[in-house]
Length: 518
Image (cartoon, rainbow, N blue to C red; front, top):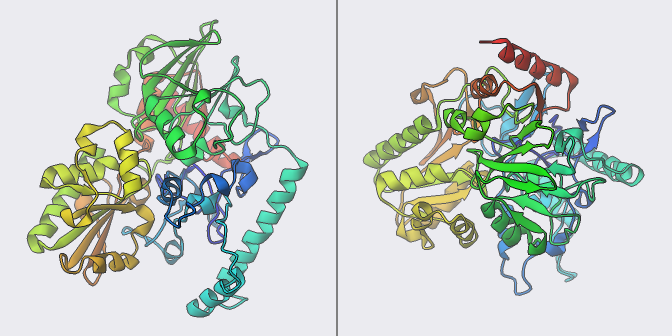
């Protein structure tokens, strides 16, 4: 979606997409919410007030054991919409961990995926023991260890980060944040993925497309602004991970029309992460609106009866990859490639530990495909296992195991896939002598590679090999074009990368071209 949102090492982002494709990942700049005079977002950092709730909602348990929610937030989410603005004016995807295997830069290596706690500006409660090192002392030690000086580029970025944070805090006290127009559905009292704007005037129903933080941001156990409509799976995650009062949650099944305040509402499968939905609104005057949330367009959507029979007047479109250079291979091709590489590695070195990077929600089919092809279980932490079991997806949940020594296939947060993962390998040195990792995200796509996946070059160091593979849960440029040409809406409203007027005009030019094609 995205999406998308957050703070990171002092880098400025212009505007959802997962920073990562799906990064779906905490630790970047926020596509938060102060809008410009046109009602479009001017990007700024999120702070704890923006997101609602406090650290008390997610802090560790008093016994020192990490709570489920705290562990969940550290796994990351989908930030596909965050992008860097370069000096030449072109945007560049924000990558985490190691550089992309297909052309990453040194700046990529400086970035890291932080937890959602950091992203929201929340801090853990520190022990009151006077012997505990202060934050400033820890910072000085880190600077000394890395060779940084007060005048270094990192130090300057940190100062810029602090300055912008202060400016954002000052702005939030003088100007209330308004819900942007592209999150409102005209002619209805509905909003979509608009939870960080408090109680929205005129809104009596809040719709949530899926459970990625750039879309549910603002929801917490204190939510009381109105009913939340979403799929049953998303509803379970909202209750389990955010502790939202169930009395505010209303579930809608896929492909079942419901009348809400006189408006016909239908949810359709979005082909994004588990539980993600396209939302179709049909007003009493016959006008139809389709909000895609985050989605990966596919040919199967052209067979959705509702989309075939009813003309969509206004399309709210996920434009994360609305750039001609993004022409992804199919997800099936990427999955087959991952399985092929895994089998080849195991033939060369049977004692290889296989790791797949994933977000809290999303990328499940990557490790499921490996599991099915090799006939092995999937190791996941207790918190991830709990999330996966909430999907009610037996094909996946029956393959999850808690004991890491029972299988060679492990799932880790995508932020873990740096060469420091060697420490993870050392934990199992008695079983494995090599590690093969996959980092599945659309931002690893390279025009030079295109659909020729065998041209992908992994990044290797000693006995660790990491592949960046273009497995995306957002639509490519070509898929967006085909979807728009199928729907032929009267109007298209982009929902990602809209903070820059030139970006908006460029996207509108694409839309006009697509609609003119026959």
